[in-house]
Amino acid sequence: MASSSTCTFTGNGGHQLSARLERPDGPARGSALFAHCFTCSKDLRAERQLTQALTAQGYAVLSFDFAGLGRSGGDFADSSFSADVADLRAAASYLAETVVAPSLLVGHSLGGAAVISVAPSLPSVRAVATIGAPADPAHVLHLLDGDLDAVRHNGFAPVTIAGRTFTLGRSFLDDLEHGDPRDRVSEFNGASMIMHAPRDAFVGIENAEMLFHAARHPKSFVSLDDADHLLTKESDAHYVATVIAAWAERYLPVTTASTPGTGGDGYDRPGATAHNGGGFVTRLETRGFVLAADEPSESGGTETGPTPYDYLAMSLASCTVMTMRAYAERKGWQIGELEAQVQHDRIHADDCQECEHSSGRIDRLHRTLELPEDLADEQRDALVRIADRCPVHLTLEGQIEVHTILRSPRSN
Image (cartoon, rainbow, N blue to C red; front, side, top):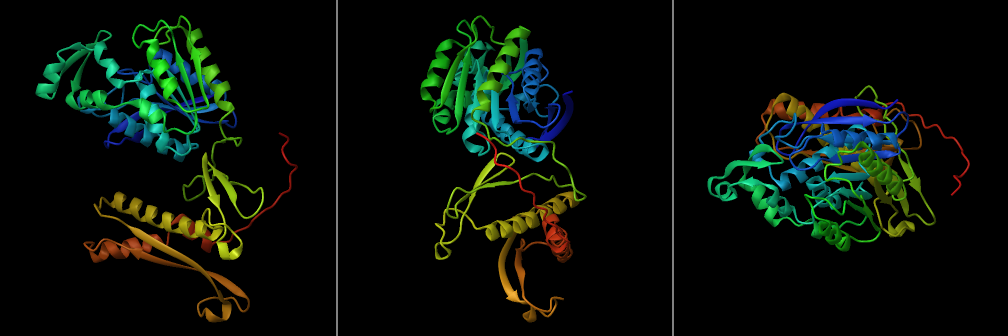
């Protein structure tokens, strides 16, 4: 049976955003990030139906309330369209840490414009689906009942939309008037699906036409017939989610995302897959991210990506600065940039006075830390000590076993 849990994460503005994570029964085919409509919340009946229907199709789905809405912190008067886009980016990072990086983005109404705007900046995203989305965010201005000139003059003023009153800030108006998702959708290299009801009373069908023409191939348009803008009929919400799941499966990675295990250090244990079709160039996939590995030209490679040992050095360097940063934040220290450089080489065991090896060669990693100059001595000493406790460091110095199994190739 699918499970649903409430959670929070820190948004771009530093506010705690209220979220809900729904997981399917068993391994997920991937994860999706859902953005609700303007002034709505994740708890709107239609939004719940959409996320639950996607979960029933095998997706882990994260939905959340934008700042100042629902149960999230912050003040709606301080929000803006670009701030919502930044919060989507923070939500994607949280989803990557919790389950797997999102490969599918789904947005309803203005949330559709937001997912279009954020998609090109999220490498894991392969497909984007919008439902009743405006091609121009400023389109929502005609839905607002209130003195917009007062908003511009005073910085904020009350407005009413769909019978509900909100305090709207000038930054939101400025963002709505200058943002254009059509520019962003044309930059997205994945698949796009535009879903719209021809008789949508809030966002006209011409918006779907503009988005569709701006999007790159592969792209699809699905008519929602007589559905209303909020998809209040359960059958409409279920239809939308079922179509999105079936359509997205064609474009998403073959690998599935299972609930990750957690080790004693609290780190997830994601899997990694390497594909090699000839030469040294190798495609790597992990948690929805696609990378490349290669060898230098002097070793017969083509220099199209880092080497496997480059990735090893990057793993230790990144884990080191993350661990130091986490320690500093727990201590409440406001410190600047942290830097770790790692180089790998091999030496004869006889050259290593501190090693127990008696013959052959050993691997050695040189790590150089660069810390802010204004640190107190005790802060500097503590960060150096904690660097040696980073999880990757402990893994490299611990006992490692590699178990290999052979399986038959997958049939296409």
